[in-house]
Length: 416
Length: 101
Image (cartoon, rainbow over the protein chains, first blue to last red):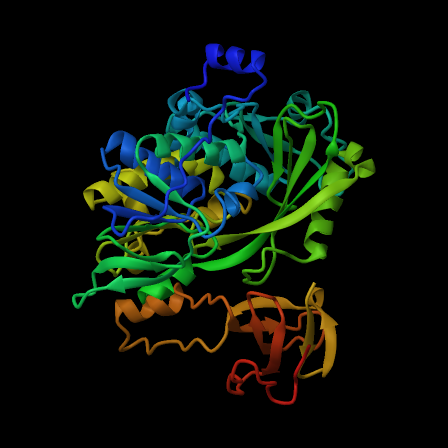
């Protein structure tokens, strides 16, 4: 059922009894043209663009839990595109462009809110690095500007710009076109649009093995709901990429770390932007429900436990309370972790693997949410044509052999 | 927060005293003979298992020494800690008399 003013008005007058499920829940068929492993935002976006732009609709999305129950539902929903290197600027700007029209394209309100993202600098070295980033972005046509502490305060009135604090704000990089979106709506919107175009979305269906023929090529997957034959598999399983790769017999340059976040009790609107500090691992924004959404840095060790150490969250809250003194009286309602697949150069891996027919879209590290539509769009090209989209080509797995890394680890600082 | 037994200090100490140092038992290839593939594997590729993981930590705020740790990455339960140079204990066994947990 299409969402429109008429349908909303009709349902509003008739008790909202006429709404139907937003996507079908079919049993898996024995075979598909393409099987996408992972029903998070990136996997569902891949399925949507496969059906919408490449005419490949005989597609299954296999999700071991429920849609968006992994990192899609655990991130802090920040969208920005001001990365340092040209390859990164291209891929994140591509995604950023898709965000601006996504709600219309999906006929689903993903609540994209370009309210501005402010990255804080606390010393002259950070200021130099962020100014370099701003200049590089402007050369590439990516919007961004440098702001001094007074200008930062004007953008974010609750920011503490007292020069006497432990980590004083000396300025910041502001991307006014960055912002937030509603993470669940992104997963649901892509799922609804993909399902409506013929994609089978199969939840509670965990992939347990990868079938290969004598030449090593993929011929199917084994799942908790039976075997499914296919010659093309797209693995989009943030947090478990190494696990699925091991099923197919290869390794990845990935380590998986817990990344924590918290939300406070809901407040009236106090924070009109997103503010983030890479140096002290703290970032904050306000959700449309009024909760302050706070992100921390990763825990030190690899883990799949979806929980982290309290000392990490505590250190983040100490930084938050200093940067935003009004936060000191807030109660935190929930604290959780998602498992982020980090690569050595902190850039994603999109494309071919040593296994013919099996492609990966992984390694988005701590910042994959912002890339959701662009990632899906580019990966759909890879799955439909067998070759990488030009924007995704620099992010091939082979770069770790060739040395052509896209090193955002030192360039764009830690929090992505 | 993890509670890690330092096999040198022979004490259970909180995680904040330690620094994580990645996968253990990696062997640096021979620079004269290694292929690109071997270098790539050594420099970048990691086991990253969901289950028993052998890893290095350094007791930075204690004795300052590196140690090895076998930890279940699904539960974060530490299965064993052992000294550098000792072989990796079999998963589930208590290693080297320095068991923890």
